[in-house]
Each structure stands twice: as C-alpha cells, then as structure tokens.
Length: 361
Image 1: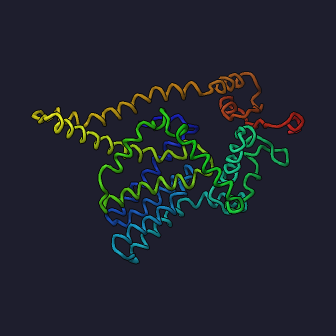
Image 2: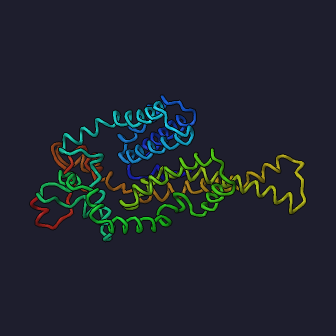
Image 3: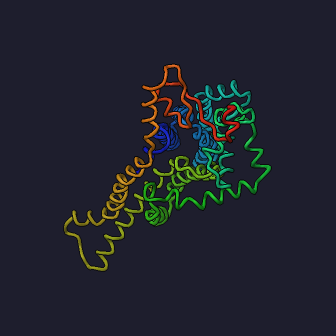
C-alpha cells in the first residue's frame, strides 16, 4: 500500500525492508512465547539486513535493551537464561555482520560500522547550507585531486561521534530542521498521506491500554524512536524512515476499525435503528477501513507516474550509443555509472570542480 518504496534510488530497499521486518517479527515472537532460540534467528536475519543496508545496525542495541526490559517486567527479575538469550541475539547479529566489519577494517585501518557514515554526516552539513550534495560533496575532488570524494579513502577520515560531542548545537539544529520537514517530505500523498494521521491517533488512544497492549505498543514505538533518534541528525531521506510505514498502517487500520464501531453505535443510538441485516451492520463497521484502503490504492498510479517521469532514461540511451561508437578499450567519464554500464566500458567518475583541476584530473 506504500508503493513508493519500489521507486526509490536503488534496488536494495525492498530486500532490506523484508529482512528488517522479518527480524522484528522473529524478535517479537521470541519475546511473546519466550522461545529463546528464536533470538538467534532474529539476530542472524538482522545481520543479513545490515549486509544489505548498514542502517540495520541501529536496531541491534535498541532491541537488546527492549528485550531485557520486556523480560524483566514479565518475571520481575532477569534470569540467567533470559539474559543469555538476549546475548545470543546480539552475538548472532555480530557473527553475520562480521565479514563486512572486517572488510572495512582491512581496507581503512579503522573499526567502523559503515563506510558511508562520515560522508553522510558531511552531506547533512551541506544540506544545512542549501548546497547540492551529490554534485558538490560526493563528486568534488579530494585533496589529492586524483579521486572524487565518494571513492576517495579520505571519506573514511574523521569521527562522527567526536563531531557530535564537540558541536551539540549543530546536532540540535539538524534535528529541528529535519523534524520540521517531515510533513512536506514524509506525510505526502505518495508516501503516507497526512490526512490518515487522525486514524493513527484514534487507533492509538481510543481504547485504554492494558498492560499487555502497553508492551506491544512500546515495541512499535521503540522502532519509531530508533528511526527518529538515529536518522534525524543526518537529514531527511524517505528511505531512512521506511520501516515506519508498516507501523503507521497498523495504527491506521486499528483507527479505521474504531471509527467503524463508532459509526455502528451512532446509527443505532441516534437513529434508533436496529440491525436486522448483518451485512449492513458489517458494511458500516468496515466502511472507514475500506475508504482508507481505497485512498492508499489510488495513490499507486500517481506514485508510479511521478517516479517514472522523474527517471532519467537519457543515461541508458547515451550508454547504448557509446557501446556502438567507441573502441572496446575506451572509457566513459560520467557522473552516473549507468552510462558506463550500458556502454559496457570502464567508468571514470566525472568530478564537480573548476576547469583547471578537471583537466588535471
């Protein structure tokens, strides 16, 4: 129902979301039935999500803490078995993620969780200044003048944590700016329409929370909190917040059903109508949910049309033309690697720099 995920920047988003949500489902199942062996499976699947997109690592620590709190509130004390089960979740994640962590260490000489962390943090700074990040940061030349920043070893230099500690005002400014842009960037007609938010609120707060429901809602809110705390400082990209879509849809569905119950009761009480026909009664109850589904379904062709119209097919055509007209050992200089891929030739990134440095490069 949130089809815009299929039209984002790379083909890794759908498998990443599948693995992340599968890991969350396994994790919750392990907590529900205290099937502690499933923590191993959850950690391993979350590790696969990390190997697909490294954003998944943000959930490992938060879920471990949540599991300890869940198990402690259930038994009023943490048993050794429960603590060990949570530890196996983190351990299985690390074992699956280890090859990439080791790969980064071998090639950079540093222990890091992502090769993109530092340059993504810098990209947030460029957005603060209103610059075009892709051109001026990713494809600017490094200090040697021999490589673009995106492919340069210099992109691994620096420490994001030190930057945050040393400049807390910058962190706060970024969080406020990104949070302020959620409405126009996240709650859009082609992502999750803001008009559905009243159903989300109704679904959350129409009924009082039992202790059991409190724990389940806390699980969903933990996922939302991880997304906000971890990704708001880096600037807004819809794919960072994509795991929130299924949660919002759950709350929307619950709110729609609550509104349907209110509609049934209002017709009965205010109109003095008793439902002799169960189909009519069911129709009233499901009417708000049906309208919400129709609203989401109608966005699919709109989203597809906008995404396709904004896709630059010229790179493909240029690559096919070059494949015929340049030698087999030729190279293609372009910002987009797609041109070189369709031409079947080696790619040389085209830098964004002044003319003198461009010629030297």
